Length: 340
Image (tube, rainbow, N blue to C red; front, side, top):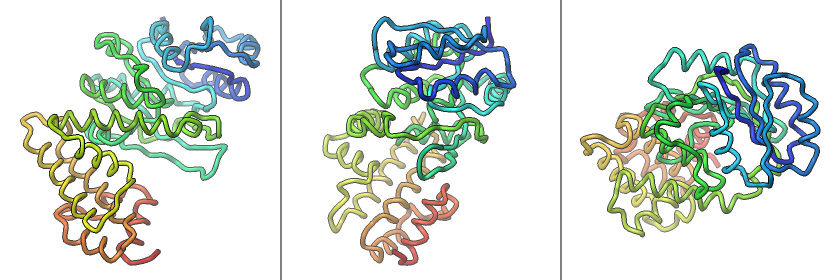
């Protein structure tokens, strides 16, 4: 049996498929199978797949178009490797991706899943995405979003089988984020601080084409994460929380005060739990970062500067230490110095 199964779902991906498969077949690590699950493509995908003569490429095909989640779950059932690595049909893997992730998981038995940093391409603006690397920070960030690039992850098949982890069709377009929230309850998640994937940006992507539905699903996951911390949350509180995380509908003269009070309340709830659902230190840092973002985006900059400096959320945390991206650091700098 191969050490790694690379799971690549494909649906009408003929335009990009060659480059994706080539990037896997040319890996420095060779003990893998590339499992391509074609989801009833009607374009040139099957013809292009049949060109490849590499014995490590295994192709299965759905009789009809079942959708991404069903296709991914079929791939999980068909996989034979000790590790399963995700790959998308329009992305390109770095030549050492599998080697680096296998080494990482072999050396860290307590990590069940690892992603990597990645670069976007074929769109604008191009950027390098550097999600948090340490398990505690990854776990905390799951409170607000997915801190893992889906096509970058590799995970232990035995762990997913033991805890019956698979993609849930009830969470379309955020199926990865939802799965990671459950995986984090039974194992530790991490990211390698290396760029090991090129992530293609184009208009046909789900994140572009299904934005509204994706936002609704994201709200449901965030609401569920909130209820892990605050089971008695009211409908009004949950609505405000979701708006806060999405930075929408934050209007009114008292909105900064309400945001501040809510974030402090969440920190206190987590602190007081005998077994906190989110790591305490990293959770505090995450919500302080969110406070900085809200202040930086607030239209009345003088009010935001005053609120920021007076808030206990600022205490003990240097703004630029929390602001992990250049964009966020720039937003905060401009907000705090009155530069539009």
